[in-house]
Structure formats: C-alpha cells, structure tokens
Length: 143
Image 1 (cartoon, one colour):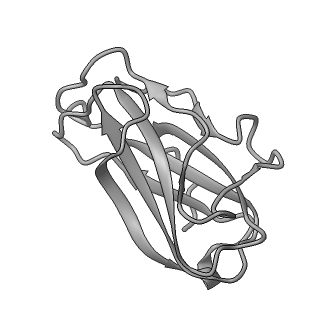
Image 2 (cartoon, helix red, strand yellow):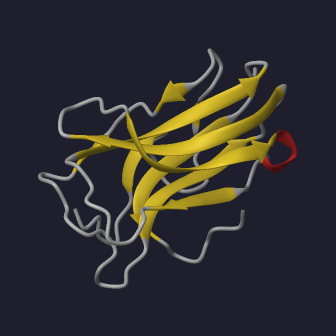
C-alpha cells in the first residue's frame, strides 16, 4: 500500500460533495468496489502517516438503530476478514455532511485487497447515501 495522498474510491466514486451512492437498503453490505494494493503492505503507518477509510454522508440515514463502518481485507478479491472498524454509530449521527474516518491500525500488516463494509443494526434504511475512499487523514473529518 501506502495509499498515497489521493482518494482511492471504493463506494460512490466521484468528487467530494457528489450525490453519493445508497448503502444499507437491503441490510449490511460491502462497498461497490475494492482497493488492490498490489501486495501485502507490512506495518501500516510506520512513516507516521495515518491512513484509513473515509465515509462522507451525502444523504442522511433513516430508520436504522445504528451503523458500523468496517475495513475488511484479504489476500484474494472480495475480502471479508475484518481489519478494524468503528461501531455503534447512532442514527442521530448518520446525517448529511458528516465525515467519518476509520484509521488502519499502525504497524498492522494489511493484505492486498481492501474494501469497506457497512453493517446495519435495526430496520434497513430507506434513505442514506455515502462516498467512501481510502486515503490519509486530511483534516476534513468531523465525526
């Protein structure tokens, strides 16, 4: 990996502020795309750069109780092994304009393929759109 200073889109490809893409309407689901880092990246964050998953909400969620944002990785495409995540984000916090960041733990060996998983607890939402990408912490995070 290192991910670099660009946005490596995995859901709702586009520019910040774009319409985003629905997620969670049918329950928990993975991002529409994945990042192929090319090989195992040994010791994420060793250079002092905090890298991770960004989730920008472009349309507020409804009906669910809370959501979890997970980073999953694996040696093959369509990984399902959880690397890390942020859990228990209440519905009241899942509003348009919120920008969540899930850091990749420093020093952890990250496998070749990375993607996101949004886990729904409670009723499946009928609204809620996001853009998600991998990249460094950039200061625009607000949640």
